[in-house]
Image (cartoon, rainbow, N blue to C red):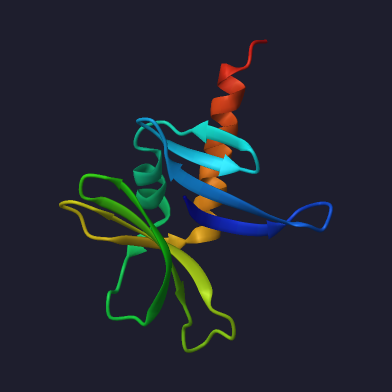
Length: 125
């Protein structure tokens, strides 16, 4: 499981959002709920919000998740020369494509929005 976002909830407690590789699908885990994301959701979000990753930039790897053959998602931390606090990024690496990098909060919120749409589509009514 890979933590992709941490935030302070309405009650003041810290909450986290994770991704994990489930039975044939990538799952978004928020608290005790796990929602299977549509195939290709992460690749589409990274294509939309990601930018080329510069491997020469100094980063700290926080964690990684193997997504399948030739595909990996890494959570990295980078402190740019103009920042005071390091920022969290996700780096998506897929076979045959250049690595893409995006702010982890941006990717997490996009995937959370998609997961909510999946839940609404499954709900009767």
